[in-house]
Length: 199
View 1 (tube, rainbow, N blue to C red):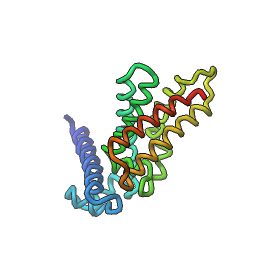
View 2 (cartoon, rainbow, N blue to C red):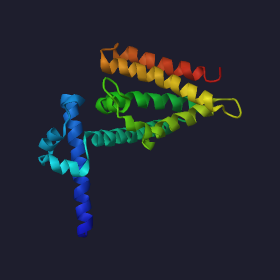
View 3 (cartoon, rainbow, N blue to C red):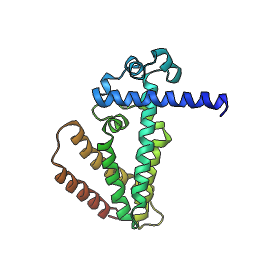
View 4 (cartoon, rainbow, N blue to C red):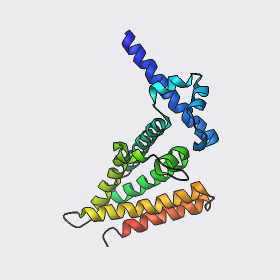
């Protein structure tokens, strides 16, 4: 390996260490506790080194948001490919979305502004649009009208998202109902919305 490649690898590793440290701090203390100084302490670098990689805390939040959407997109795509019928795929995708929210609580809160301000620039991230596109493709397949009205696809996507994100938010911010009841509500809501797609 040449010196340029080695230097680039070291830079990539340092950048990853900064992001990992930021997430570690947040998991232990919450988003309000995140600071460049704390990140520097965790990775045992000086704060100016961090500024070589990220100009400010917002830059770290944007990158974590981007990574969150990448991970969410992967999980949703895997869920889609685990089923064969469109309705089952859509159900599996929303269940994967739900599971991601509770497996990656801190990232989900950042991505969607649950109990905190989300990153304003997230709306321009192509990774954020990818998951919406995956859902919309499956919704469109269930619509029997030809051509498929784009406004109906959009309406049904936001109906799904509003209900599921709302249920997630209730459980993240305050104590919701038990897991068994949550699962019944989640699956019942998904099936009910699927049943109304052509109404």
